Length: 131
Image 1 (cartoon, rainbow, N blue to C red):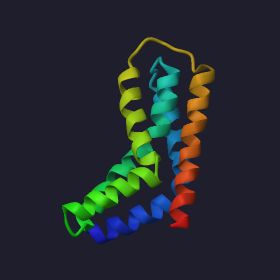
Image 2: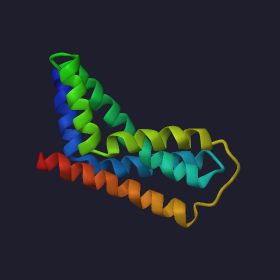
Image 3: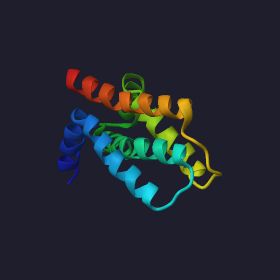
Image 4: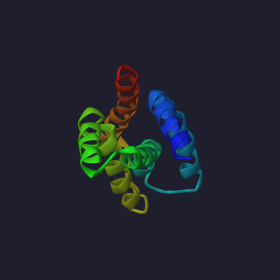
């Protein structure tokens, strides 16, 4: 089971930029459910698919490590080489708490944050293909 999960994470990380499509569908679903904070919905929906994939990838890395020190070294390498592995989960957690907050416009900063998150998907795919 973990062997197929390992292969799945490799494939998904190589095609990481396609998760933006999943984010778009999640965004539409959250907007349809009448959540009133569009900035939180936008950032949460962009970050959640990537955060879930990174959580599974790190879990699989822990299972395939030969020991704790090996996992520690691979985790530190993942966190440095792939900034999306820690940025996306942080954004997901912060925006999850803001989903029920008062209505806030997306604004310039929200738009730039969304562009940055989109660039993280492309960067992760490019770095995974290069490694």
